[in-house]
Image 1 (spheres, rainbow, N blue to C red):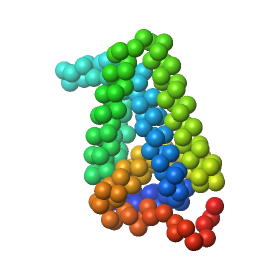
Image 2: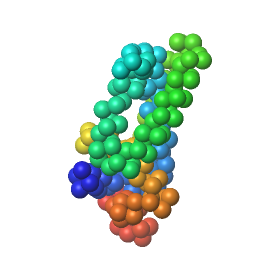
Image 3: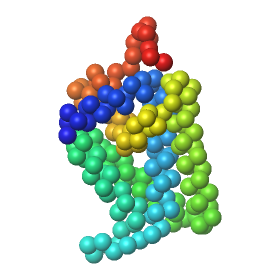
Length: 172
C-alpha cells in the first residue's frame, strides 16, 4: 500500500505543517489512545487459550491496517501501543473504578484539547478530520513517520512531511 499511503499522507500533511501542531499531535494522540483503551483493559476475554483484554481485541484491526499501510511504521506503532496498553492496564489495576473513569475523562479531554490547540493556534485552520474522517487513522502514522525521519530513517517520507520554509507563502 506504499503509494496509497504516501498519497494519503500528502493530503494529511497539508493540515499539519507547523512543527508545534505536530508536537501537540504527539501529546494528543498518546493521551487519546491511552484514554480510549483504559476502560477496555478491565474487560478480559479468552482468545486462543489466552486471557486478552478487550482493548487489545478491538485495537487489532487498526494495528493490522497500520502494518498494511507501512510495515516499518506499523511495527513502530505496535511497539508504542504495547507500552500504552501496559500503562493503561497498570492504571486500571491500581485505582478504583471511579478514579479510572476520572483518569479516562482527563486523558480524553487533554488529548482533544492538545489537538484543537495545535490546529486552531498553530495551524490557524480546522482539523483535517472534519473534511477527511479517515485522517483519524493517519495521525499515528504521521507522528511515527516524523519520529522515523528525525532518527534518520525513511528519507522517502521526508520530502512529503517537510515543514514549509519560513519565508514561503502558506495557504494558512
